[in-house]
Image (cartoon, rainbow, N blue to C red; front, side, top):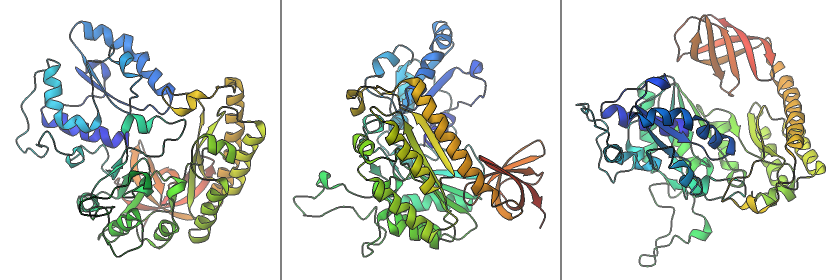
Length: 445
């Protein structure tokens, strides 16, 4: 999601005459697109502060901060940056730069990104960083308020884009030759849903929501996200559809069946569990039980047997006992995750969990992370080894030297000797498997 936002930021800067550089020391402007989910990400920003300040003092550098920034972090950040703004305000970037005494360059004549200051930043055509995969954000913000998470405070409530705008953007990328469309949102499967607490009923007209802009077929009982993904699946062309991230509370059987039946929808599902214990889930305010989560896993395995399921896990959440951690270990055995992003709990100022005592030692958190990673590697290796000797379809995404890199339809990483064009669907015979990826040989057509 941050990459997608950065592509739109880059497009605005390019449109007013600036060019990108990969060398930080050459840059006159540095934009930091922050992530506040973990304290370590914020700490890395402060780690660069001293180096940047030397150049800022000479007038050689201006720095800007956007993205996921907690209100409590802003006073400290203001000393390290010339300006802090929200991603939705990039439509006003020329004015923001002028306030920082930056002389703007000549705008490009085509004006593809000329927009009114009050326009939606989603309408900015991004400067795509990949020629193979296109990021398509479908919403921003989050309404779940998990106890450990800063996103609702930094990004605000869920706001969904009109479905037709999303479908048209996807169609444009497919016509341009992109082979993978990645639909992005903090919680994509709540796209277009209205939480009961919002009470979104117009008192004058008595019109209820979701509005027609989110629902492609008002007569359908399917959730708006399912309607959206099925609509994109109908677009002519050879391409894959991915989406991330799904919240278990909003994961529906309709979506699972849509993935199973879809021609282009890939069988990769990222479904953050965070813990395998009900008491911990309740303290995290995850709003579902482990029994609910396991039922979703059962349905995925029933309708999509070859699906790859990934998850997020927090170890060492306040008061997590060894027995509760064992429940998470047991969940790994049950779910057979192929991928897991395991984080050691760290408190974030302003979130509900800061009221809990962070009473699990760092040493114990590291121990649990190590044990869980070992469990994951054993499961992932066993699942990957089943593909050895088989031919799989791979989307060739990049080449380094004579080695091609890509992913299978199920999002397994593959590297193989290859010197052909990127952005092609190629056949690869798997010769070796490890827990985190596959190796193979290119099978000529």
